[in-house]
Image (cartoon, rainbow, N blue to C red; front, side):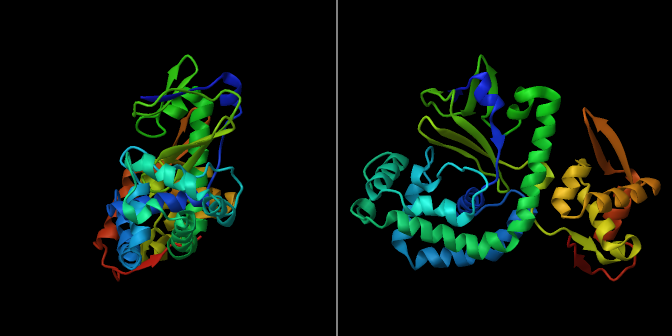
Length: 335
């Protein structure tokens, strides 16, 4: 297994950051695999996969670059520069573009585990090609709903921070992604691969959520290390939540949207982050839903979590299934 030696000061100084490039690269991995893990991903792939495949069919060099760069056990390092946090996509992708062609070829060779195919072995434009593909994916497939994705990522950070406050780093890290857990004795297991341990004490350590079910690690030697991990549970589905029209008419679209989101327990802060509504608005919606006994609340450590009651579940399920005699149409919930 791969693990990092992390002293207490480094762990205490670590933080969660968001990265538009990491989100875009995670989407690239999903497009390359062509498989989804939940309905939101299936809908997204249905829209964007045909154009992605058409793009690569017209550009066999870039298609080969992607196949080699997304290795079975190792991703070509230049494709995943370590996030700094608070950067624009353009600033992040510039580091892909500025990679040394020689280093890019070396990274790809490591990813494939042997010599590069003839189509890549002598090319100096591989960083530019990678940056161009990532930029196209960002502009066409990620940026249009980045604000929604960002709110989901922020909600995940809220949840992780609550876990950290309640159970310490062991609790927060053990549920991060498969293969990542706190081993004790200042050791952080980052994956299940048999890689040599790394001493990272004194470096900057960041944790980076993405909405697709993807994860990897990256680093700038001795300076900065990152663990990229998938959002948890229902937060990973970044679809605009469909609110049944009749439910919206009954409760109001925004309030109905809060009720629909509570498929799994969420805190007020998470609901604010996911919906984009203000804290006061979300609080008012929750009070009305509590008074109507459509939601309930319970305390988990320092957090208060809200979830649907049996009555709320029956109401949402009936409206979704069209069993109430309404129009059967849906409206898209907007913040």
